[in-house]
Image (cartoon, rainbow, N blue to C red; front, side, top):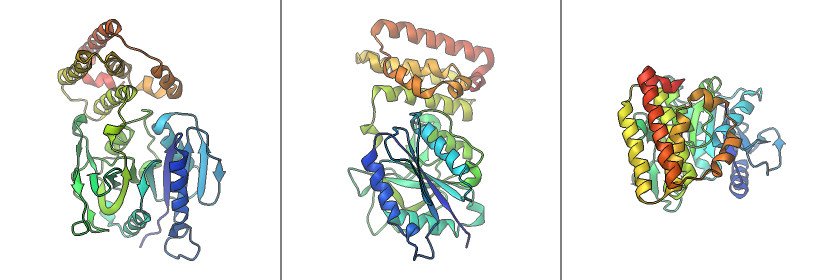
Length: 345
């Protein structure tokens, strides 16, 4: 049996009720019960508040820090830095959304697995399953298959019944690429030397999981309830959902057919144009334009300030007509010069 210490990394932004409830629930667990010999002291909570509304705290097991609004990516990165600097010998880090609902059993089952994990799987992440918040007995996904951006879900929309869902049952070969950060546990040996790319929001978990390069383990009972993504789509999200997958594929799959990438982007902007949704169309165009600036730009841009600027950007029929042609020409020029590898610069 291994000596395991877990850090929970939570980023929050103006969701005080959710995160305070979740902190309170965790603090009532066996991990904070002095009389419990198995679990006490084995879990620390790190909360990064991008809204700077929670009271800062740095106690024995609960740590709350204010942070500028660098999105979920920047918040989780700040959490990583605080965990690294804590002088505590952590074994694993759980990345967890602030607005999930969970059972404490999820943490106990995960801990019990980690203290006895087979040696060949010690470096694999553990992906928490995601159940639908509005349909509590439906599992939305167990883990994710990136599929170059055409996302597929493992055990998609599975109906959960007591007869076929066995708490503690471990699946090592789900075929998944990564786990979403509604709940995903990484070994500290990976977290110690790997930072989160500053995507602001969306696809940071994809890139981090692909970079880890080890298939996530999934366990029945290690799950949370979370709002599904179709209920969260806004025009500004289209910007990040355009730009960030382009970066992910350029980093991890630079051999992808550039013409196919361009065609897919064209189809997306055309669909919004035909619908007369010029705001959404512009954000998809802007996402491509900013992707073409490269990773060096991404790593140095002030993400908080740029996000505020994005919120004030407006597209229209004529502006979009010019912008998409500029983006297309720039894309083709870069591809002709040095191939798709140029997008990694």
